[in-house]
Length: 73
Image (cartoon, rainbow, N blue to C red):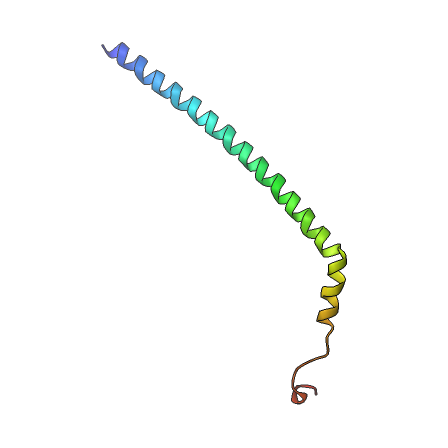
């Protein structure tokens, strides 16, 4: 009876190991996909900053100082 119980425990352990290996594979795939997404987002943001609209945004920052004259010392 003890031998049969050990066999069942061994099967359970092997099933758990297989399940954990599959979960690990899925997590690695998800991490890889997330990394690729982050790279694409970073590239898109860089292109946006270098695009023609970027010049217009810089111009709005160069607007005259709107602080009250008492702050201009």
